[in-house]
Image (cartoon, rainbow, N blue to C red; front, side, top):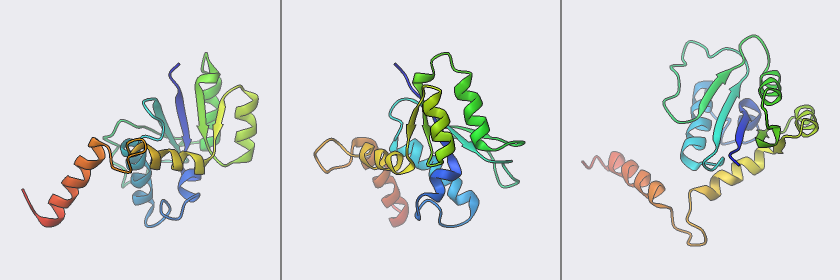
Length: 153
């Protein structure tokens, strides 16, 4: 069964000092890059829900992760409505530390994942099992970063 992850974006960002560092746009992009590159959702769909409007500095997200801004309501309401509309709520995983939404999600028959567990899942996903070495995709990204740093073509 394919799962659908709904991520309470600012809840995840504010749960971790590294994620919450810097300006708002950098925080958003850091979370989205983490999801696209580290794949804490595995091969499942990730929908990141931000509270409010996107703002002037938002140009969309080119990655695989879907991004939603709740605009006229809070992210919790947006997530609840999306989970509620699913034909199989057991296929939903909601990532949040917010106790009220965790309680609602559990009562609706969906799964809850804490922000810490979500972030841990991402740190495990980029490594080959047991080898301590990065997988091919992570190694390629490291190589590209080093080429940029050392200005090697």
